Length: 317
Image (cartoon, rainbow, N blue to C red; front, side, top):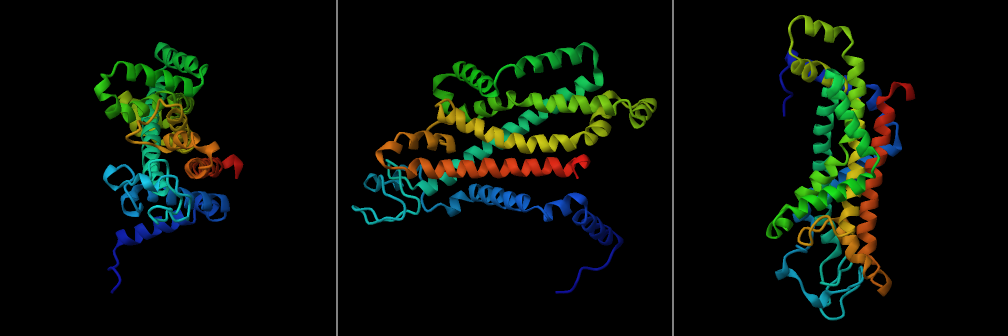
């Protein structure tokens, strides 16, 4: 195959790519074993969840594929009735634990990413408005944030989830449970984004480029969106990465307590709750492997967020 023809655009693209690869952040990433390993583990788990239907040996939530005779099969051992072998064993219903983990991982990651995205949009919007507009608007937003900070986030999420589920008709509760869970976790986590963005906006709004934008008649909305927002995104990215791990843990906690994902769409927290009931009867693998997956996911995302915080902070380099 011949090389692509030379054009000024391709040369500029290559230059930007080389500059990104040789930047301080990229150099720090290449020299950090923690960042490399945590990124590899995170990507492996995300890809496993995305391609779960192709990777999983069985569809654990299709009753037609289940055989109760396979129940409580130990990892790597042949079932005494059917002779089938399962890599990570089976649960009480004969479901392959490996397959349930892959499908449960999809639910946990979807809830985590969606909740963080919702909290980010809400928190950044309110933080920009509070920092730029000021006055009574800033006072109201930040006092609401201060009041919410006095309560543990998990309790706020449980309260919101309970109220939303209570006003939902019983026949639709399982259908909207995942979305209610996303809103509950997102509403309990927006404060961090709002406080950081509000502080950064207070600094940025007094700079010359914002004053110049006002002088040429830019609207406040345009100034916040096109001028201030790009300059406050670095800390937001760090908070979002760390919040992803916290959102996944919050979802697992709520599901473990029985107020999260429905049994028809179990997450890792739901699988841990199910496995906890069989721990002391000897079927340890039903709890152990979902818990290990949750630990690996939360730890790798958290370590990646810690590295990103240090890499983007020039004072720590």
